[in-house]
Amino acid sequence: MKIVKKNDRHILTLKRAKNGVEYLSFDALEKYSNIVQGFSTRTGGVSTGPYATMNLSFSREPDNREGVLENYKRMAQALGVELESFVLSYQEHSNNVKVVSAEDRGKGVLFERDYRNIDGLITNERGITLGAFFADCIPLYFYDRVNNVIGLAHSGWRGTVKRIGANMTDLMNRHFGSKAKDMVACIGPGICADCYQVSMDVYEEFSKSFDKKYMSDIFREDEKDHFRLSLWRANEIVLEEAGVHRENIFTSNICTACNKEILYSHRVMGEKRGNMAAFMALK
Ligand SMILES: [Zn+2]
Image 1 (cartoon, rainbow, N blue to C red):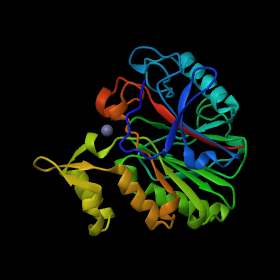
Image 2 (cartoon, rainbow, N blue to C red):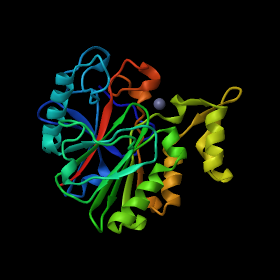
Image 3 (cartoon, protein in one colour):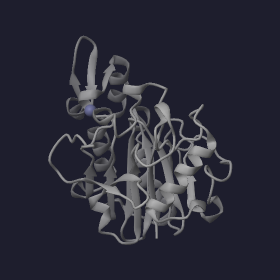
Image 4 (cartoon, rainbow, N blue to C red):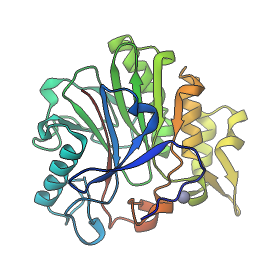
């Protein structure tokens, strides 16, 4: 199946692992041989019905736990990481970020998570595969090339208003000495502005968080009291204001809703759907 792109830039490449798992990989991160990263598609798993096939959320019932666990095993194999290495977010549209260490390995896949309300994960340890869930919201990937620190965040419209991207760079700095100027940031697949109509209340929340000069960049006027929202652009602004250099920010041109055969989209499918996941690890 062919992926629909919003422009001709080479940002993400669709990869097919030997076991049939297909995932998207950021070209900008591929050149760092110590980084593992990917964004799953619907292809290569065992889930059925509206969850077909690569659902990576254990909480989307009635999809069964055994099937999702098998999907994780296949994903681990495709990425070349250990099943025990996964540490998953517990997303509640917050801007909370957790520092992950070896003792967290397996949490969310093999063990219960002993944390809640965590939308961002950072680590400087090898052998940990950070994971977060998506079906239209925006994944943010961070790599500090100098100190070898990684981060992964879930940034839907609420997280974007709360500037989770800036919290990520702040906490990477506080815990590991990372500087935004040394970071590569990738803004992943999510819903595009053409597919994302929002109402006035969303516009008003953004107007409290973003400088007036950016509002026409982030929103396009639509029918009465409605707008088209570019979460991709809004997250670029958050990252630029946090000090990440513009030339080090790589924004997806692949929309989840434009590619509903290949990717899950909440806007298109509603609650009866699976979840994709973003992954990042230090080798
Ligand atoms: Zn779209």
